[in-house]
Length: 366
Image 1 (cartoon, rainbow, N blue to C red):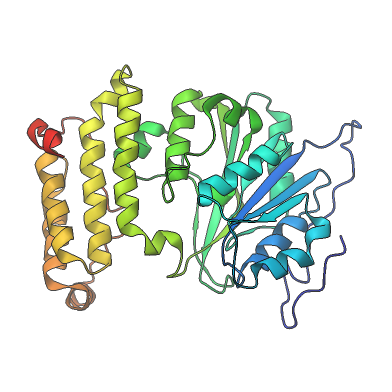
Image 2 (image 1 turned 45 degrees about the vertical axis):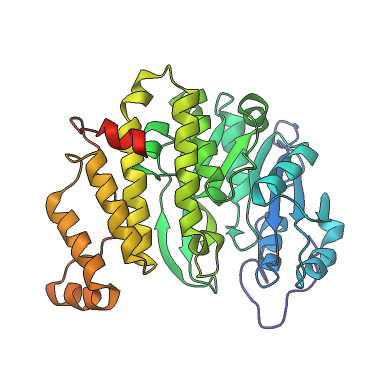
């Protein structure tokens, strides 16, 4: 595919390389299933060209690519215009946020398979061909999730690679996390027809809520995992997730209220209600510690302990509390001296084994 030339000094994927081009039809003469990719964007001019090229250079013959921009004021729109001849649709106008932008794109689409990739992330070569083949082979599969790299801000250094977890709504609720890496997830259109679109009231945890809703609706065997790395998820201080940690915790509990209220007849779900709320506060304590808010960290930690006093490892929790009191600098020095492994999310979660108790009084005052 002849795209506009890459910026000078940019080489490798997706600048000077592209995926192997698939033939227009499959060996049996059928068309490849149409895949729709939506990119929501807002003032991501530093990164969006790389995202665009990683989609358009997939070598997939039945690709529909839509960009929904929220009215960017940087160079994002100029970059989009350079590639508009290769796009199915694009628009730049104010919207209600990321969830609204993705929904708008999906509603404009005609693909049998849907996905979204944010403007600061990229697909790996051959990602779409890999998932398209999986959907073709397994008609009952409604979701395919792959592995994903997390990179630094340059996109050139891989910090770690995450394998896809199971789509298990109960574990996602227990852990306040455990979700697949979003750019490596693809789903059939029937999913949004049957469970609805993303919740536009959510701006930080909309994917978490969506995967939980999806997991409660479909059978586990309808989810397919692959260890093939499908995407690169950029980690940098200005991401929405890093900047909005307080809002993440607030939205997290809004989702808990909605899920436990809506699915009140699910006994297995109701049994983990307390531990899910407790874990939410434990996660808030961790994020508060990482963001130098010790008062909120201690308050949230004690609330989690009171809700589920038997669910936590006392030694680990004492170490956590000490790290909050000492502060990050002193804690890092102490950990270096003692060679203690750094306590990090998402492993920094409760032990959700059977037998955890919950304070109903605190739940009522939550």
